[in-house]
Image 1: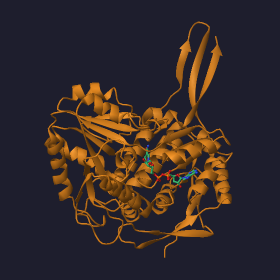
Image 2: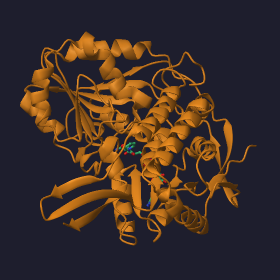
Image 3: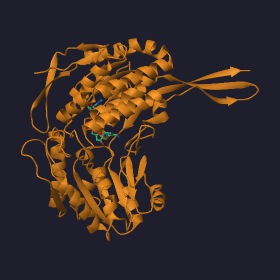
Image 4: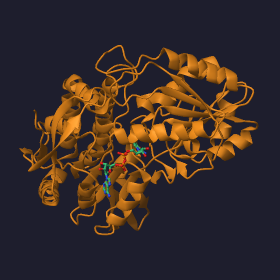
Length: 469
Ligand code: NAD
């Protein structure tokens, strides 16, 4: 059985303890992932601290060139890593699956490599000149979730490295292997100590985020863990970028052509089997359009090939883990017990954490499947009578990551969008993130943004040089 390792100071380090990782589609063993100790966390932070001053003092151009070489390594190894993602995480190779995740890893590395944050004259008159420089924070702790394990790790580590920080990354305990392999490959072109890993569950995450040697925390995951991380950061006062859960509402304005938007709605809701932070998790449809929208989504859901994602003909795979599988089943069972109409599609394989693509009708705000983040392939479709009522519903929960408005007239949709409490409101698309466009949550979905120049600023601190003339 293959044993995977952490990377510390450019070396593969053997762990004393391991956990076996299984394919969620087949139950096959994938090998042993390392389990770090608190002392391993200390060694990884020490390595990152030691490497940071040297990495910060090489020229900006040299760092950009190195990050561009990282993008090339990702591109060269994308098929190997995509297959590992499919085996470990479950999303299919095809469609918006693991090859798509690898393309995103490459793109989200190329863009920071191309961006610049030069010093900025923020004030000047005859007496003084004030120049704002952006300097690295130091050592960044990156804590990743299991749904897009490599892409989200890249979002966290690449801007940090680009700006002269060093990193200690902890992948999710559900999906460590593909991430550790990606880091091993990336480290072929990074100087030792710039990118290090530790592995394990929340205890190791807590040891890392509370470590006094950490200067910044990048966290993507659930709201509950986000709150714990804020508490942990009182030990090191590290600023945090918090990307937390979403419960994104999509509102279809009355009279919108259901056939024209069905595919966008479908993938907006069922991308990665719904295990995506910014997926449509509540769909609000005017009562006069309800039958047409449910009909169009049902047709698509009924046609989707479901199964082991290593088979290139499949577009829908299993849920990633038993915990999530049971959670989604429980929410659907709760809806059924409360009289909702549960519409299930697809022929499920006998093994693995497969759940049918599910639309749930005759459901209202206040029911668990609407109010809780399902993070799975079960979409509540809620009828509304007035657009004001739909907007109030969309804004009625604590989450504020994304939202979308769907309409024949995009101008009309933009007016509605301004009233939605979310970090991003998409028009006639959902979850359409881009490496140049800042992305982050409002309300309980977190704070801070990633991507683009704003994302680079978030992994620096301002240093003002103020000159008397
Ligand atoms: P999670 O919070 O359970 O785990 C995320 C990571 O935090 C894991 O690596 C875990 O080991 C670690 N962790 C757990 N306890 C910790 C602690 N006390 N201190 C430090 N680290 C700790 O989340 P998950 O189940 O892996 O991910 C799903 C959630 O993430 C969903 O709510 C989803 O919406 C959200 N998410 C948000 C975004 C975004 O960009 N906003 C993106 C993807 C996922």
